[in-house]
Length: 346
Length: 292
Image (cartoon, rainbow over all chains, first blue to last red; front, side, top):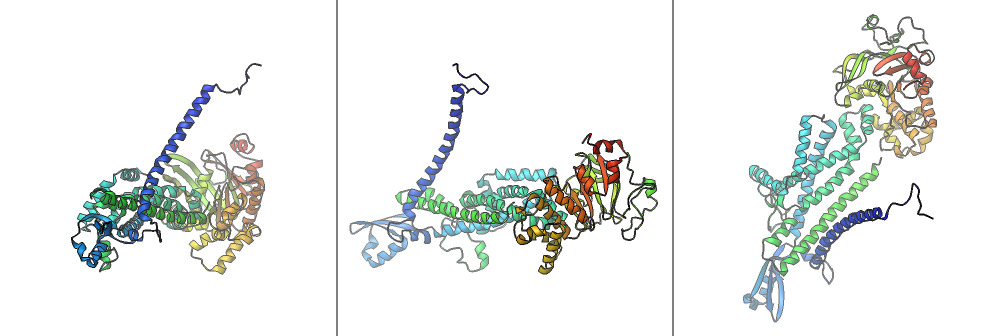
């Protein structure tokens, strides 16, 4: 018989081929992105793991996680190559006076650990997200629940959108001019908090507004029809349901706040600081001290000091710890969000 | 334009201050002279010459309507005729929509113009409850749904709340179905149960008036029958205004029916008269199913 001649006859082969080609194009684009991501993570993982983990128990390089950065001294002693941190080397010289004159090479920040940077980054994230959420959620509530649409409100929305496109270095400059110089806060936690908070505000506001919008109108009307005020309605019957979405947005915010170097390099970050943030005389001093931070530390050890095999360890070790910390904070937020989401389902 | 049930502006001036609370007004206030009708109740809500706008669009034209105390009043008419708009004027839910305004006229409840600037909208909505087209139980437990309004108004005594929850759920003919799972989410109920939960929530705050905006449009016939049965029970305690697309429903549940078309009140009369002996040819065409 002839090939089937009916309404549902197969398309010509060329059509099939084109379909398959397009399908593969999209599939390859997706795989390519996956491959790039994997390359970045695996690179940091393998290079960083050597610094963070050790071959002998307890298998974790506790010095790296709990000490401050030190200079590394490399020298030959009794025919063997020795690597020692600053303090260790001094103790060694006291024990072996003959070592005082040994020829050493020194590498800054290549020994010790990154504990102050971890502390600084966590403080920066917690403080700036608190400020950003307080301001951002308030603004979103105003824009979505109270404000009547008009030219002024449209202008505000436009401004918020534009703010989201401002490069982070510009926020850094703004923070420097505003908080560090004009308010006289100097390079401090407080200045860093506000600079970072302003940077993520557009994201927090936009996402919070979306979450508020996603709460069905019926919940508001139902509440108002029972004689609730607007604020009662928002507090009891809108905000609790919007919270999971707001938290989701803040998770993205956390990653940005933790990761940005530019906004803190003028406002909050020190290259090195001997004391930990809580070692202050008065409580007020806590807010007006600069801190070390992981992204800035990576920047310093990668571009501000001579590069060699020893600095590379610190770079990748720091990057590795940094990723783990961001992942931990994000996981905590996700768990919190899921708990809230299970409580309020509709 | 014809509005048979409401007296013409001149006639109603017989007593501008006569819109006394229903308790003292024992004369048939809502009846135009000469109309033959069933035993009447005092007027609770008195709408006069009401024009209402969404921005520049006029949604309601010169509405004159008296809603009687403890009667069921049905608003019928094709989509977009303004019946829901008028309903939402009665507890000022339209305030929530940007650009809406009353252009002219008054709505008086107990003789008080509810669009006066010194009217507390919160108090108004406590007294004039509402049930929506789409049932909207809050994503909380059944118990919390009922007590939501009470807690807002400061009732926190657990024993008292328990009592009101039971009373309201019984009042909404839902108690037997949910008494064993008051802590379960209100969203776990069936569509019809959800709507009855919303009714229970509304009656828990003891309003005088319950506005129902197409309460059965999303329900199946069995659930609809239950809600209609419930309306029959509630009529003894509340004044009910119901918007419906379903003419049989209006015929079954209401005492008085108002027919709207294109933002105007075409005819307002006893339900029986509207359906058996309409005065206006448009009403006749609509109730006989020729349009709409």
